[in-house]
Length: 198
Image (tube, rainbow, N blue to C red; front, side):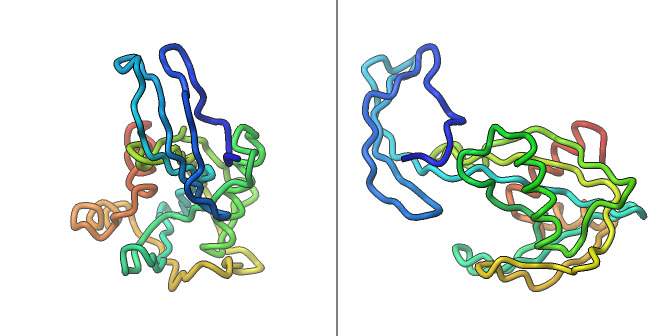
């Protein structure tokens, strides 16, 4: 009924009721009633349930970050972002599946892969919009990426118009000038800075 069990009731939290109101392969919406530490009588909340995702920040051997420009229908724009994609259902606790997803998205969306001496560094996870969804994204730094011999292999639902390498200064400037507006990319940048990896 749900894509993952990453979010569970814990001390002070209890799901009283969860009714499915919408369902498709990518999104399930529930009308819920939940007891919380500050609301012991419960509260109603509409929760969008989505699969977990992996986000990868690709770094070339010459110190540039790869971004893909992808058309996003909900916002009617093509925006720059790091490659990302959903993890197969019920595998979000499987570290190997999470890493495989990150590497798959790197190859499919950017046409790049890890070099033989490259490394995939986990940066933790975050919630893109926790006010209405339990979706969570695992962040990675792919240090030492090279063009893949097979090129990109975009999913039929994707509309990636280009992939380009940007210097650290260009990347920072794009964020400062609101050219990068994607939550996954901004969160990965924040985590890279906090871990002193940028």
